[in-house]
Image 1 (cartoon, each protein chain N blue to C red):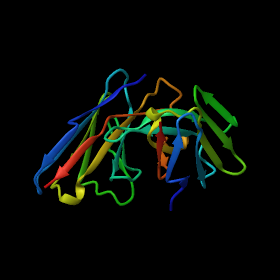
Image 2: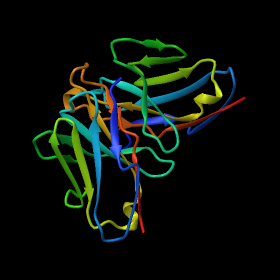
Image 3: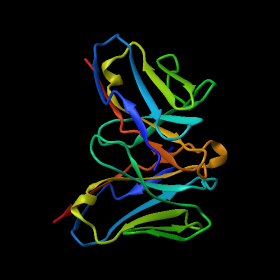
Length: 113
Length: 117
């Protein structure tokens, strides 16, 4: 059973545009929602993360929006750049359960110059 | 930020042999490390949780006798793929949790590409 569903699977955006990736989760015990960026052949790198006690968190060009009632969260990449072309994964975990991450399926983002 | 390294970055081995992958936390002590595998164009799947000084906890469907995990120190965990077969070819990634932070953040290593011929 996939506990974190991510969409879209792929995304093409023009340079300077906004990339939006959505995730939905089922387990209401999740209390940590990170986003990771992964380049081909590399390990994932933490971009930004949010706890369920806030509805939005912004770090530079990256913003997480969190809707607890809908059990959804999203990543917005503002002013997308060609260097942002990568695969993005949302994830969720529960600290009480050992902080094991459950990953979404991933979104391949291509930013065209 | 916290740095996690893996060695080797890639390895080719023959079917039936064993291969060991090392995961090190370079600038922090990691009481807990995690091992993932990732097939091409797919997501990361958690294989096991490695706790320093105790036995690893394996996820359902992961053969513990095939994927041996040892976490002998606070900075090193190893994954040994025993009697490797071509279907074990994958990208293996470790992560480590820094207890000095909130406890939530996991820092990932660069991954190890295993090819079994």
